Length: 187
Image 1 (cartoon, helix red, strand yellow):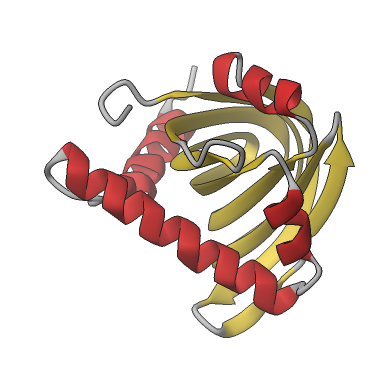
Image 2: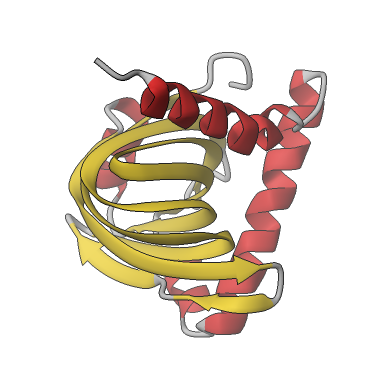
């Protein structure tokens, strides 16, 4: 059995997601970096889709995640971090995420996701159980402000999910599972 693609995939994922480790040295620095990322992502979302601001502000809560993803031929993996904000009590819950998928494609990308929870029970279930499974297709060729990406907006299970690519080059169609969980170090 040839293990080179798996080794290459692992190496690319470690290299690509090493930015997640550079959040800071202390839990306080990491929390501050995640909150700064949240604010930057929301500003970018509001610029691209101004109506999203009212949706986020009127919802019981929302989540913002930063995720790195690598797809080589039939396997994709990703990892990231983020925060859920409860708009009712103002509390933040810091979370991690990991994903794995199968499907056709090749690429590497750094993308952001904003999840708006339309009821508190869905938000609580997300925080405490955190699984998501689904299909995904995208095309991206972006570096900073150059290039473009096909992002998406979907509403499922009383959640609206906005996704957009920060940097990357990818063409992929896949089935994937994503696990979100509380970050014990930061909560």
